[in-house]
Length: 172
Ligand code: SF4
Image (tube, rainbow, N blue to C red; front, side, top):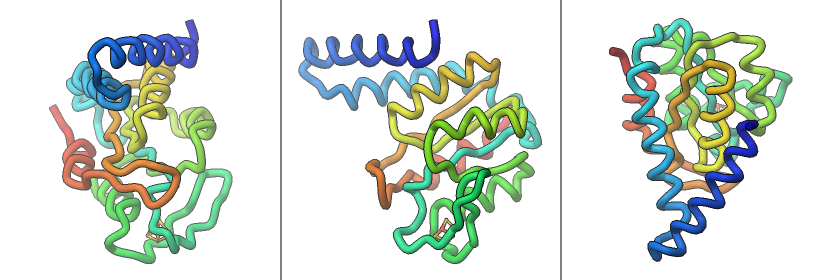
């Protein structure tokens, strides 16, 4: 079964459960991702920083971002010290991560993985992208952890920076 077929089945099952339980699909999906994260945490923490990459969504950039878009995604110009993309990319660099990528869309993940050959990935994303990302990377034999956006949407999103920084720095 492909990752996208699995995602479809999981989402359908979550939708049914949410109706039965009287809660939102988003709540259940967030819980499901946290369970996947918990299952991957130990393996992720064992991987050295030099074999990890950080994936950031383009929507996390500041509204007036001037980062040019290239074949490797957006290239941060470090114009704003408070920008969450900037803060996280700089921290990944300081820790010795193999790279940070600001993705224009999920379809670029395969290209980044092929180019960098990481053994672990941390992704900042919305719930559905996180689910697809974790399952797709599992197919490649790569352990992944998602830090879910605290404010999602396609523009001007936000993440819990402390949670993201702590996850980046996870070690065994
Ligand atoms: S710091 Fe980087 S990502 Fe953030 S707004 Fe500036 S160029 Fe864009």
